[in-house]
Image (cartoon, rainbow, N blue to C red; front, side, top):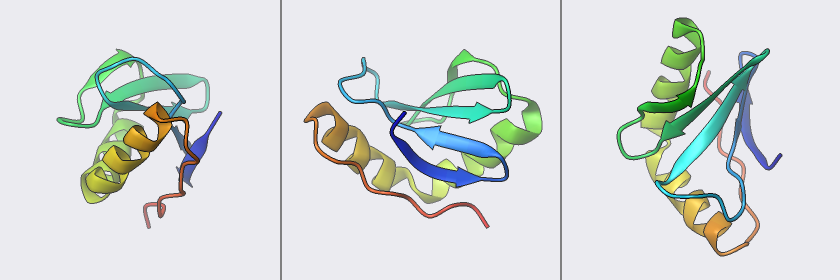
Length: 86
């Protein structure tokens, strides 16, 4: 899994050659969610409300970096790490 960030037990990843719309994956324990980058909607899976709130807070801060990584992943280029939520 191409991990790009990790915080508070949450792992964030973007997969190479993944389907549209632009999104990222968040894993927290046994829960997995897929979040759209443009509006931070949970489009697949489940995350507990507190974890989802932290993921959205982080994504709002790093939206541009997420979009850059999405583009890089679609071009099969290396992804860069994004600062964790503090």
